[in-house]
Length: 289
Image (tube, rainbow, N blue to C red; front, side, top):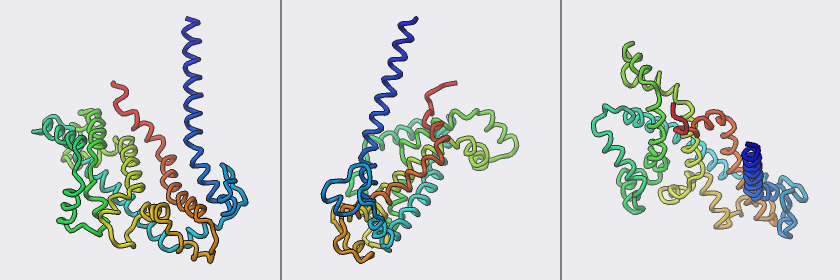
């Protein structure tokens, strides 16, 4: 018994050490970007910046935050994230509620077709032609409607809905609630952990998405933040940012790092707000009653 306890403690401590070490390693690039965003161009070009800012300056953030195009892209991304996530959760929960009912005719076939879409996704060209035929090109709806329901998230929500006691639903029906009222007043309030978890998945996808925007959007005024960030990193399009603070020799790398921080930090701040519900939702299906 003593040996088993000692072995278990060694295993737990080893896990703590490994996970802590892995977390620190994964955090180092983020700290380096943060330090570079607050460092002078000379310090960055000379390779003197590690995880602590050198020759502290706010000029990189000033160049980014004074640029109107960045704020426009930021507002587009916020709209896509909020509206898109609400749109996703609405239709995903509606479909999941129906599929959670055993009495639904063809339920097994529908679930099979949903799983099929997880394995065989829509090819690029047919997907583009479909969006074009629907008249969604150069519209923000092209970034929302095609990905309205994620098959993976749908299956998670179906599993959660099936764990809700059927007696609650029957009681709601006895009280005169229809299916939509039952879904809105009974099922959704009980599904907050699931909705929070899946909502975070959807929100991160909208915030970080750029490929669909590159395919479907041509108007620079509709570019989301990640597309603007790609222009800076890949195309080195920093001239407008440098002119916004009248800096001609400012480090392009510092401006890029500041832009990365501006594009990354807002979505990171969402997680602590829903951490409690997210942890519950992440444990879906791990324990059976």
